[in-house]
Length: 484
Picture 1 (tube, rainbow, N blue to C red):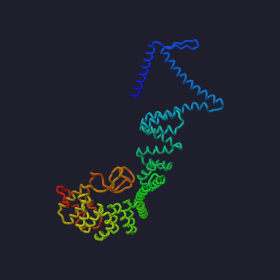
Picture 2: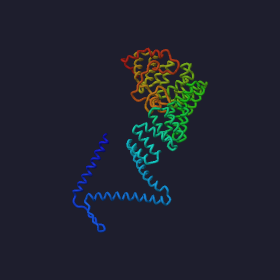
Picture 3: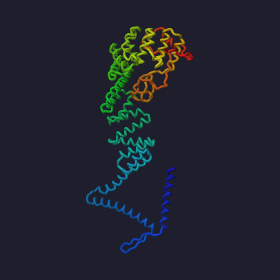
Picture 4: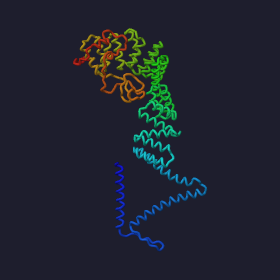
């Protein structure tokens, strides 16, 4: 409505201006005298302007006529397409001008103008691969998904534009949330152009979301071959996919295949904690405790993690606390100052009822870097040493609101996961989970046995999880104990 009103205003202003100019020229005195071959012509100012405009138009028409005559001359000399080329050139010029203006409008974000120019270009040009693509992109910009989809489907009809059509439809389905159809289109686009990096990434992400681990590994291999992925990154992500594949095989009850897949995943990336743990359990099931101990110890030396300690305990689940403390030296002698190593050693000493050694193992963790786990261990130590309930309750009260410590966190969206997964549950990003501390302000509210994460198998009677549970940890008036 506003545009129509503006056009009317411009038209009225132009007519008014021309009328005013004509009146001024009529009132103007003087003119021009033209003498040609004894004839004299006197022109007023207004007549002179009209004569000049007429001359310009006549020259322009004359040039056009000369070009047409030239085309007719060539046609008479045997060039049968001369006249048709003459008119086609004019149409092509107009078509390419409209196409160029449409592209600039698209780049400027003027979707409706781009749509108009696309229609004009399609009228003059016999280049549907260009005009249809411009129409599709302009329709997407204006939110006209129906026109965009129809345009992309037209591009599927030609071999040279089929990939563009498939890719455009794929992006549309992704925007609509139809990941099943998008996956099929991504596979088709990958067949057409297997080296296209964006299609590779999209296909890999969708395959990971759908748990198509075998297909994802093939796509990952294609990324490596085409040079779109560094070899070390490929090795790590292939291990993630192999581990995910092993988990699915295990869920299906094919234990032998799962063990082999888990061991392969660990070989691909020895520092991948879930792969190490699964491979160790596979070796334990194969009666190879030495091999399980070796790979767990190797990964602990790089990145200590409680899951590694838990798997290490499963190698000999029924051993005595003293024997376990001795066997675990394979782990505890590595990274001795790491918080995870200190807490592991403290748990082992608690199980063996060596409470002073457990307190020494914790060191200054409870004062310099307190977490829910270290404070809970300190409560267990105090309970084992016979401290008052108020002292134990003070430690547990602090543990309730203390930071949780390192967790599985997505590098892409910072979402915290209870357990490692190959795909983020929040943003669907692939291989972005990292064992690290959450952002400041994140606290844990553990309860029950979660407060005392002992992995040593034999819990002494003086510090059982039941004893921890029955304590009145809801009393917050008790001051925290003296940590000196």
